[in-house]
Length: 171
Image: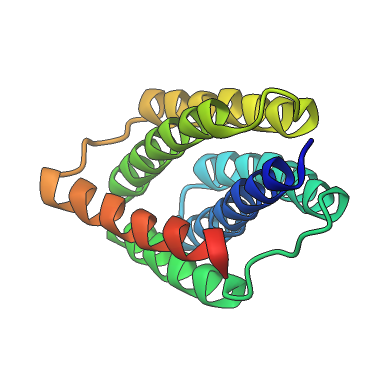
């Protein structure tokens, strides 16, 4: 890869790493918030897969001689709070939050597949696998009884994600 391509890949993988930090927080909070033992196990299983994603993106950042976002503690805290609130409201709402989050992440990852340099096979493979896993998480949450979130909540989630991804691209 050229230096420019490597910087682009590093920025995109930093954003993806932040997304996995947020996923850890969301699933951890939702797992703690639910009283349903089966749902707790489902959240914990999804969190384990997200841990794999976190490791993959962290390793790829090292390979690209890049660092993770300096704001990861902030992203984790904010995501944990959102997951906790959704989980304490109701399990069906919490599952709806998972569906919407994973659908937005899947779209985001698809855009990264379009942006990543064609020669960056390692990053592309990671992003593709993450995209497939996130789609499966959304489907599982939908099948478990998720409710659709109101449009203003979805818009607010998109706006928050835009702030996070734009900032993480650089910081």
